[in-house]
Image (cartoon, rainbow, N blue to C red; front, side, top):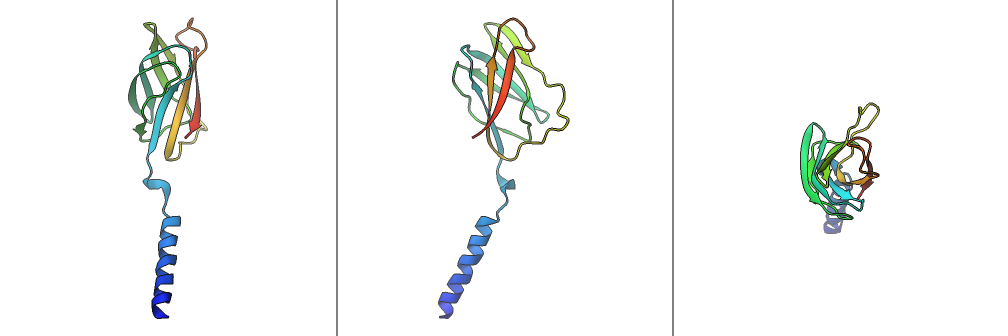
Length: 127
């Protein structure tokens, strides 16, 4: 009887610890997905005061995840298409919340190849 009671108490404590473990131990991991018909070259993402280089990302492909200190639902992005540089330049992050730890994808598309600024769009997907 005492063994069953001790076993029950241990199971309750273990369940409580597992259920109540904060997600703070998780990292913020972000990858870039090229949703356009063009190949991206030298993709760089600046978020959280740091720049991450994702290299080349072929059309309809994704990069590997990289760990960020913090980021928002959009970021500064610079890349090349056919030797021309394209930039997504956020104005500010006023009112934005930092992303919670977890895995995310910045889906990056290009709408036209005329302008360096304004041609790229970004959307965030929680993986």
